[in-house]
Length: 74
Image 1 (cartoon, rainbow, N blue to C red):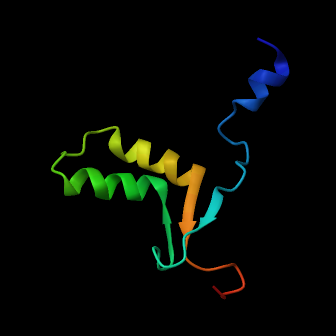
Image 2 (tube, rainbow, N blue to C red):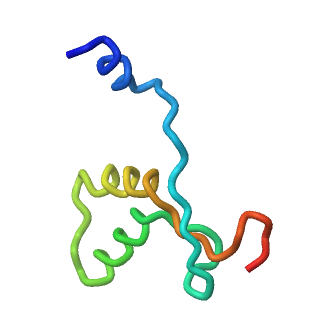
């Protein structure tokens, strides 16, 4: 494995921010994809396991949904 690849896997690396997707009318505030999946699975009766929080955290880092633009307008 190359030195550059080893360095890129260090846990102290700064991650790029999550993708933000606007869903006006569906989302008030901001919610991550992991939180959406967590809510949906609990609603249909799937009990969370030990890795569910890790999955939710990773999905939340990947994409978030918001109902408004950054400037506060729709």
